[in-house]
Length: 252
Ligand code: AMP
Image (tube, rainbow, N blue to C red; front, side):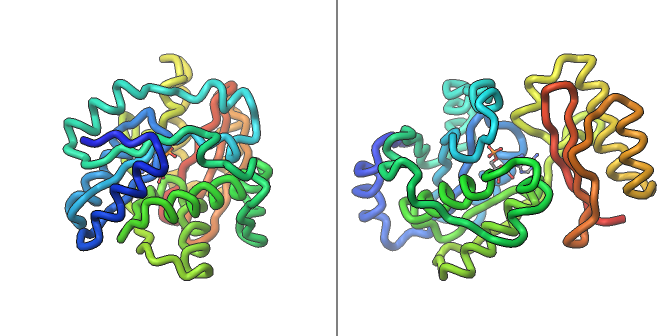
């Protein structure tokens, strides 16, 4: 695996890959089975796969969330090596934001609800970094998880609106014990919090109504940002103490 940290180094490599199909998996690291499922899909559909690891500061609306975000580069590199990924792109923040984030991509409708309502400016950060990465990597296909369903919709919308060349592909949510969606933030749950967190996927998958689910979650000590149905899905965001979890399922 070639680990590339400099933008101009990647651009020189990319210029030599003209006849290859390139699959791209953007991540913020602390890789788990969800990320690896995207990698496997990319490997099965492309000649080469590029994974990026970049903890994007502009999509965090709380400094505490950004500073506590798990950073596990050594372990991630091992995982990518054993999954036979061709390139790891690992740029630094200043290089990705030569403009100091004075240029931003804004969607003015669906970015303002759900995650956007509770995390002000979040999707500006997401769309801006994804556009920068797509412009640099120039992938044939780019892979995103359904776990972040609103994010996938908005990136697809941006790609269509701006005539981006990459195909934007969504992949199913990978779940672990008790159906809890795999997430980098799960590593911050202690055993008691993890046990409590399992109520979230269980209730989201149930045949209860949105208001019944919300009431039950609150009774079990969750702070509920939203439980709602939209885009043919049932989506939710909750807090287990100071750890925020999101998930969505097909509307029952
Ligand atoms: P992140 O590192 O959290 O920014 O996630 C990078 C990509 O992996 C995004 O497209 C996520 O939607 C996707 N992803 C994260 N968790 C899962 C999961 N449990 N199942 C499938 N995809 C996931």
